[in-house]
Length: 276
Length: 314
Image (cartoon, rainbow over the protein chains, first blue to last red):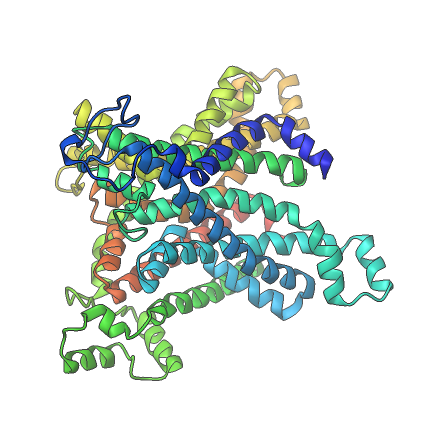
């Protein structure tokens, strides 16, 4: 593990991706300290101001500080990414592992259901689920989690299938280990690398889908500082002040780029067989 | 080819059946009474009862699904609770608009990815390669809704070169239609270009190392001819599969792109259905778009199997 960690720290993509991701995490955790202003505080007399020493990213149509809203938006994006990926992993990992280990009709049925969920365009399925559950951040987290369950399940199944052919699994069975014991003590711990890579890349997808839902008016409702919601509101005012549209979008792109690069680097280091 | 086709069609039928169950379940995930969610609480009881009966909500769940899927298979996806129009009629009007945008975006994606991927592979590890891969990475990292907004800001509001929003039918004004198509197609196509450029590059790199390329070069064939006649033909096969997968991404991306550019396609229809809680329209739209994406992916896979006989026997 130490060797892989050192390899990751030496990987160029990991350094850039990790740096961008770390910036997002710092912004998310330290928002009250970094923001310098209340993200919801309106100052109508100072609306649509350009960047200045007082307002680093300028102000929006209600005179709210864009820097503060972008920083608090990181908290929301990171929270949605984390919770939705936890949900996807909590459902997808055991499902995929059981399908791979048990095989037979359970595997066939579970994977066809996963194929059906995967066949939907992700944002369209998320929209459908949010429409059913009601707009809001919580619904968005559940919807993104459900959209990503098949991805985690398929990766877990493939990893379990590959590990089940290893000699140490046969040895564990020969020693009288139960199926549960073989799966949880020997197979699953060796399957976590590809799942971790997939979840890292999934973080980027979660951030984009959450922002997309908010952009469409089906995600986090205003006045909460969601990057997608900010971008949606900005469309009316960007002719007067481009800053309102530039900075939230830049924040989404940087966050997505960070997780994509980190995911690529982790794949190279942890699971070189997946490298194209 | 026939056994392969039979297997794929059986799998497609099963996936479509499961997809229909997922779409059907949307209405039943609504907390409380779905009819009340659609019509509001102020509507009188008899109107609610009428809609409940029309949608089959007064029957057991299995019977509701059988009724719904039976109607869907006969081309009846229900009626909009807002406009009273048949969902199939609305989709017949909107779907060609979305498909036109998707096709144009695929064209933009391929027009960028093919040359960029080939040049990046041929000049591996050069500045050109680094630049092409950087742009490809930006293509997959920049969300389409920000790209679209930025393109409007630059090309419509700042330089006033292209219209910011709106749709013009091709039959009415071909030039106007093309002018209105450019920004949405580029917005949707750049993400695809990012994904395909990486694929084309790795495909060409793999083929460049093959023996037949060395033989072609040894025969004195020019580098350009080797690429065009031998390498690209083989390198593009895996790219075709990725394009099939990306159809679903494009159709999903169209939902947001149509919203940005006020294109009256199925994406805008789906968003309006969510906001107005018009569940029959939402269910019909999601079912048709997802089924379309699945069928297109199957057609692409079949085309791949036709071109590469090895696929049919694995």
